[in-house]
Length: 425
Image (cartoon, rainbow, N blue to C red):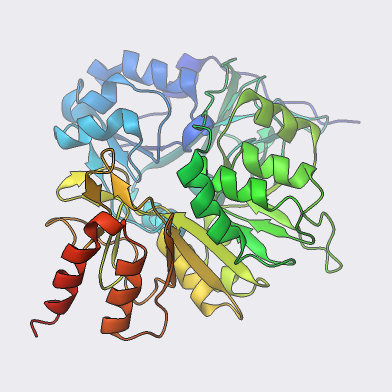
């Protein structure tokens, strides 16, 4: 006989669990409990020192703008486009981190934690799934009080992000359409970059790519490969298409899953596919992004993007000068993991220019104030539409020459002069 469910609460009753100094932890993206945060903001005038901890929100909210002062403040671990201006204006805070370390950071800094998650409807055993995201929230299950907001639109997916309603501090139901993240179709430049990347991914490789036009192009070029594995922090529509193509192995003799992620961003088609196809396993980010765990995978090929690369190979992937765009995410996690893996390789991709070709992304020195996300000692290959710069094991002079060779030809002469002055020779 299936267990009886605990009685459902109202959203207002669940927000009653928030007291002075509560650290409300909510998942990133579509894992956000929309109704709970709506009610929390509606009560902001009566709150005291409440913090909302979250990466990459997909909905812009009043508390992002500093509307409630210190009564209700947002603590970000990765800026989404909607909240960049709020951070620049000082209305919210940003905690530097590598993605796999976020659960440990939350354990350290949250004194009165309350985890609030959006989930699928319960199954016959009263178990709900966090659906399209596991991230840092799944790592905290069983450690901190958890509140569940059931969303009938959330797909049920497999993984370590399951919650028994009998183990919750309370639950409610609130339907909300999942936010879609559409990707610009790859253009000719994206496809040229993707061709260089795909040439360096062999059959049997374990692939990590993100969501975007270049990753979409890369995935599209891998459909004729065989026995690929996917181990990535972000799973998008293009990777679903790659799985459907038959290029990805769906079984493993050891019983380990072969398609693993910690969160999914994409279109309604992707969310429907995840609900219908039981092939993707969601793990907490301290598992998916653990450099030690990545290092144990076969033929790791990690593909990540950057905004600017200097002639030493330092990659500014989260800020340009003092203008913060995002945060570190999992770039360093996968750079380290690929470097530690047997036969592992990592590829940093970028267009050679920005601002309609007027600015080179390969530079003599990073824009002053830029944050180095990809440490020069971890960067293996840098890929532009003009080729691949192999950096691992090369001298400073050889690195600079390789990077100049993949810059836009219009900027190479200036970069060569910068290379001569690199060590003040």
